[in-house]
View 1 (cartoon, rainbow over the protein chains, first blue to last red):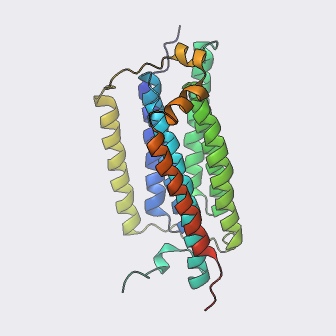
View 2: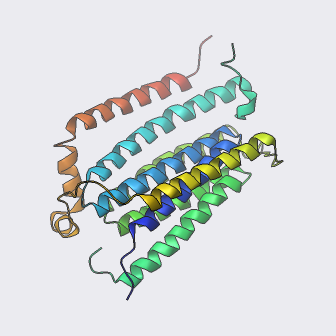
View 3: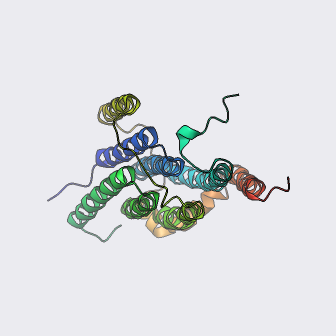
Length: 103
Length: 177
């Protein structure tokens, strides 16, 4: 008979997803792909919140995840609007080509 | 998930974990941003199924609706709007910065692993056990907590969303000058 799925495996999956997202943020130079990797990292954190809440018989993790989702949605709207604006200004979303804040 | 056997749970967990890992690797390695976005949708769906496995059905539905629906639609729309799909040239040459980034990220991963395997789950046990949630209904329990104990944070989140909408409209409208 198999045991119940241990908590550690969920945390392990969350760690793997977070690391893959971090690799994407560091190595990719396309702003929209970087944005998607940030969403992936947020998802990994959400997974570990839900795991903790589920194994501690608590719903506070779920509430946190709802707020993270709200912040991610607002971030998506504003961030993509900024990308469209930068594309109009520069003709590219390649992050190495932006030095607008350099002064 | 009360009525499902343990073996079936393990099967679902292993399949979804492999699917999430594989599709997240595909996000990072594909050259075309549209392909990355579509693989990200696969990742979101498999994570949503893991939420169902963890008795968080409300969050699973919200994940599919908010992430896989709204956010990814926005991302795909923007990729198509700025013609990224034919301008997608990703030079995969190995530079010093990428190598250092990879090393730093592997160190980050090892640190997280050390944390996962060293610390047990600490924290107070709450009162929402699986049986109580099944009796009460997951959505009803989340709703009563969200509009009861956390109502102030909920209102702040609504203001944040309003600010986000106004900001996006202000940024994206056509300038006169």
